[in-house]
Length: 96
Image (cartoon, rainbow, N blue to C red; front, side, top):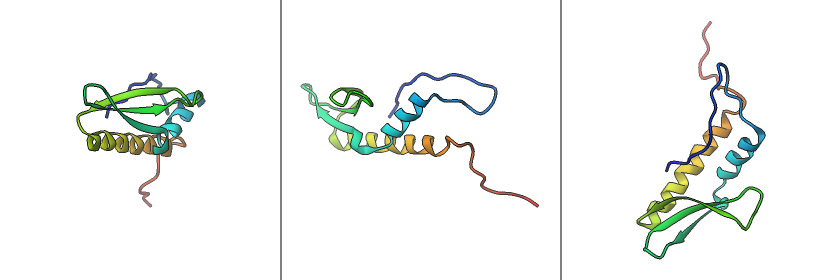
């Protein structure tokens, strides 16, 4: 699933706004997502707005409900990884 958002470039560790961090954390919870069936038979994935709980934003369309759920699962995992690295890179190996 491709999700579009605004990015900026820096020469050092990327700096993200608090608003962006809140959005990433919001999108990393599956309970903030839903699937709706459209008139043409396709299934549309949507996420609930961070501030306005009765507003939903469409993200992608799939031919099957299974495909839509898989797209949501992929998005949730993507945003979980993004929030995990907000404090900087993780040390995976050190040398002496």
